Length: 154
Image 1 (tube, one colour):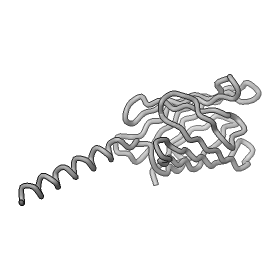
Image 2: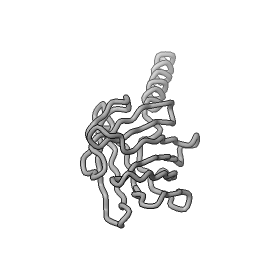
Image 3: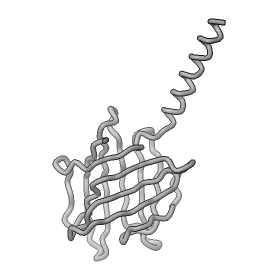
Image 4: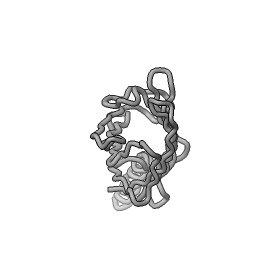
């Protein structure tokens, strides 16, 4: 009987480890660390980014301010499979795709119509406490903006 209980406990432990390891390192709430970030002139600052499960997909909610200091809010729900899914609330894009590169790094692109307006990479540090996002954006006037933003896990 004790052997069965031990085997059951070991099985539960390994099943839990598999479920936890399947969750993306990007999941959770991330707050902008402005002191460690570098913004191009005219850049939007995303102050809070939240990644959360939405069924078999992921929901990403972004809150920040644009270059003029106006509040911005957008939401995206999709999979990290490289396919484009709709963005709501954004004036600069209407579709976004994420593609997993490895367990801590993803690439992403945003489109407005058929034109790619933003591309970048998101990398979570090995300790899981910080996330660096490097982006290249083309604004409505055709000007390129390069940002390196750092976020702290909450």
